[in-house]
Length: 93
Image (cartoon, rainbow, N blue to C red; front, side):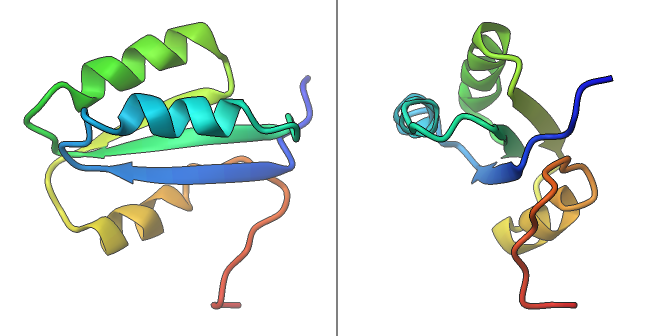
């Protein structure tokens, strides 16, 4: 069994096709490698989901969560139930 990643990066995305590739490339370019990248597609109507799926096929650290349109804040909170990282930063305890 593989150990969970140390850090989970949650990236909410709503109609983010213009910037998603740059965002993912930036995360993958970091020298720290022990992370997962969770892209939360919040009901996008553009090509966001397809771009995310393309990236997920290139790197097993990338996961995608697709939700119906909500709001960015609630999308981030929902995502915490699906993250694997062992270190979580939160103001709530």
